[in-house]
Length: 101
Length: 205
Image 1 (cartoon, rainbow over the protein chains, first blue to last red):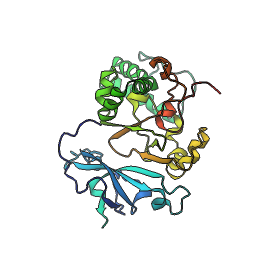
Image 2 (cartoon, rainbow over the protein chains, first blue to last red):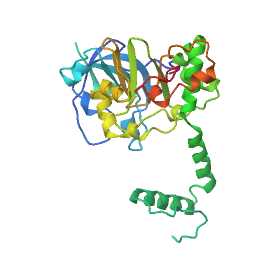
Image 3 (cartoon, chains in turn purple, cyan):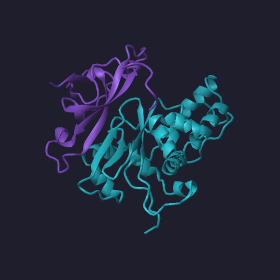
């Protein structure tokens, strides 16, 4: 990934604990089911991107949404896991995330 | 549409989807939306993209630490430097394997894949089986590719659900000190850049 062009507008920074919204609605949703409602940690802030959930319907994708790589520990997704340190990292847009205090 | 409209159709029995694709192609040509030349150019462009591009980048990163730093910091610029056209990728991230951390790439929503660098994805990459098991049981998937990971190695599976495309920078195989870039590139398999297995060993088993 190249150098950041603009300061990301999103709510979170690297290291923040977040919860993925458990949401469903008609349309083009880019957050996989298996992490909805799960908690993870912001691994990396990628910057602002046109919103694909709007682009998918021929709209302009604005406002841009900050995209993060969010790390989930295996046990936080699947419950018991023999490899508790293993992680799944999912690219998620800002509007799908809420802070975990 | 008649059978006589300027280009060949395959002679064997076509599947439902293949028939549909040919019908759409014929309509696009008939209505002048695209030309035969456009299709030919696109086929050539698609064919030119192959895992050989990724292998060039990886082997250069193995022999040249300064290039490796640039490749990780700004992969698209590093591609341009090597004469590889990665402009079709929106954003591009290099995941560096270490002795303690192993990366693996999947797209659970569809089949997102760094095509300019790795060409077309293998069929298994697009299968429901891989997309489900890469997340739930990555070590089991790696085992099937012949890679048994020790417990103290952390597995990081990257689900490329958005604008980012990932490539794994695998560890350089032991026993390859002093090898040329060209010989090293032969060890860099497509699957090692998806992260499901290691590059080929220096001395074949």
